[in-house]
Amino acid sequence: MADGNHSGSCLCGRVRFTAAGPLRGVIFCHCTQCRKQSGHHYAATDVADGDLTLTGSENITWYVASDRARRGFCRTCGSALFWKANGSARTSILAGAFDKPSGLAGERHIFVAAKGDYYDIADGLPQDDGYDGTRMRRR
Image (tube, rainbow, N blue to C red; front, top):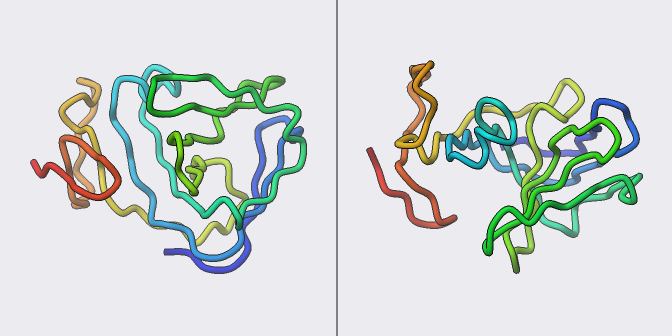
């Protein structure tokens, strides 16, 4: 878990953010939606909404990906930035959008049963077939 203030942006810089306070470890999501949107898998942390400050929020487009969540990206450069579960008081932020040093570290892999067939997961982190935010279905 990374503490302190962490800043980042999209590729073109029109969307900037600062996350204050503790960040969750990075969760690597291998679900079909994350793979299709990113071309690989998502690597994201999250922060309490009250600890997230956005600049350029008018440049964010929110795509309603399911009846459960939406995905935020820069409407100019297309950078995937956020994942937000409906009704949640936390926002997931893609780890690659943070400026260095991020202080982030991997925590676990989720939806590994849906991962791409062109790579292996060999980093020793826990692997789960699903994720609901509280309970994991272990491999």
